[in-house]
Every structure is written in C-alpha cells, then in structure tokens.
Length: 400
Image 1 (spheres, helix red, strand yellow):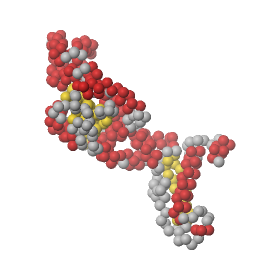
Image 2: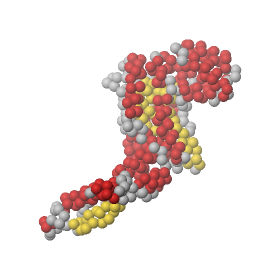
Image 3: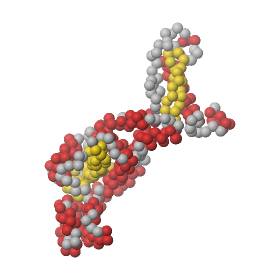
Image 4: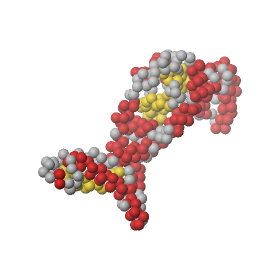
C-alpha cells in the first residue's frame, strides 16, 4: 500500500513523512500489537477477551528516534498495567541502530556538535550533545573489558608508539597516549592496549605496562620495535629477558634531519643509507665511522643521536631481508596512528584522561570495518613469519 501511494503521490523515500519512516512505523506498531496479543491472550476485538482479568486499554503516542529519523508510534496498553513491550521498551527513546550510528560517527572523528548537526540535517532528528555523550559513555564498560582481556602466550613482534593529545588538567598540556600493537603467530594485527602517560616515562612506567601484559598471559615476545622511548629496553629485559628491542630506523632518520640544515638533508640521507642497509653489524660500524669523518664535524648532534641508539639500532642487521623489512620501522602501526590522530585532532583537547582514552578506543574499534585490511595484513606477514620461525626456533610454536 505504501509503495502504491509512493508511485501515485510521489512520496519521497527518506526524510520526514517519507516512505521509510512510514514503513518503520507500520512494522513497529505491528510488532507491538503482536506483543500485546501474546500478553493478554486474545486477538484484538475477539470476544474471548471479555472478563478474562486483563484486556487492552487503548494506546499512547510515543516518538522514538530510528536510523531513518524520528517515528511516532502508538504503543498499546493493558488495564492491569503489566504489559512490558520489548521492541520499544518503556522510557526507550532510541532504537539500537541510532546508538550504533552515533558510535560509528564518533569513531570516525566527528565531534558531538557535528554528530548532532548531521542527524538533524539528514534525518530531521533533534539529538542533544548530552544524549550523544551518554551514548558514547556506554563504551567505557566495553573498553575496561577489552583492556583486561587474556592475551596469547607468545607474539612474534610488538610495536610501541605514542600519540600526543591535549588534556586539560588545570591547564591544557600535551600528554602521550601509548598504543601497543602485536603481530600474532597467524599474521593478524592485535591492539593489546592503550595507556595514558604523564610525560615523565621511564623504566618504572614501562615495567608497569609490560607486567600488566604478562599478567594477562603474554609470556614471550620475540622482538619489540619502538621509537627510542626512555627506559623501555630496561623494562623489557626485566619482564621478557630474551626479547630483542629494535629502535625504529625511520624515526632515527627523521630525528637526524632535525639537526641538519634543509639543504643538507639529501647529503645526510645519502651518507646514512650505507649504515642501515649494511649486511652486518661490523659493516654498519665501518660505514658509521665514515659518516663521522664526513659529517661529524658539522653535525656532531647526529653522531651522538646514532651512538646513543646504537645498541637498539643494530639487532635487525643480524636477520635476513624478510625480517629486516618489517622490524626496521614502526610503519606497521602508522595507519593505526593516522586514524587516532584524525579523531583526536577533531576534538582539539579533552577535559580529562578518561575522555582522551575513550576517543582513542573508539577510533581503534572503528578500524578496518570491511575486513579487507586484515586480509592484506595477513598476506604481507606470511614470509616474515616463516623467517621468524627459523630464526627463533622453538619459541614461536604456541604449543611449546
């Protein structure tokens, strides 16, 4: 009937009074009618309902927000007042699809004001910023469960990186949010957790993080890749003594350019390339000495930067090219960081640490909605995992 009216009268599909809204209204009211029939035990206008102790008592109007816009439905009542509708519960003003839409938009980086404006423009629905905040606050329980879930016994590689966010604590200041991402033995990506630092992280801070991961079941890590975070190697050695810590070569190069004049960047990059592409640690040492001779007098800070990071820089030189490609940088986590930065940048600053962590968590939960990224990731890690199996014989097999 609705389709026939749409053809004859030119009824629009979406928007207020549109075909989808009317169809949703009919479906909801039909479902509610079925529920009241089951509750009172007889069909509408059926004589069997006379003097049975409970009967229909008319309807009341109620507007619910759906993913096609606000819909007014007539909710049936009974004389005993015991009817509890399930499809549109008492005091319920939104169907679940609306909550999912708000969470999805928030995960993509939209602010509360932008989400409210979007719902008003597209669906004609008035949703306050407070309601949107209430919806997104519901993810905190899921976040706590996710942050404390059991982990695998062993991971081939952990990537540790940080995103700076502005948090207001008396005054707005930059605070690091740390993300620990793992590659599983099957070659899939797994975000193990997020932590808010206070800017003064050292061995004690990282010992707390890694001990938490170990308590969740993580007994062994083959390699850990990071960006020269202070105190991290010492904490890793305490929790997982056999883990190899590898500093990110790409970040090392970027940090080197900070000490060089713009016109010398190409020269510095060309002089450093033989160092990080050397076939062995000894060869890398020889190339670095050559770099010191050619550029050390002009840029002693670059020499000191590489010298200080040398112990965490050289480990990947002991492995074949398949392992080198995946552990020489934190590029594997960059796509994750890009999504987080987009969500964080849209909000400017956060009132507290919990709000910042909620934003990051929602951005992480919105990663790869189609699953295509997961398939590409798994294929990319097939060859490196075979190389890890040989290089770390006996440690990667889950049954050991």
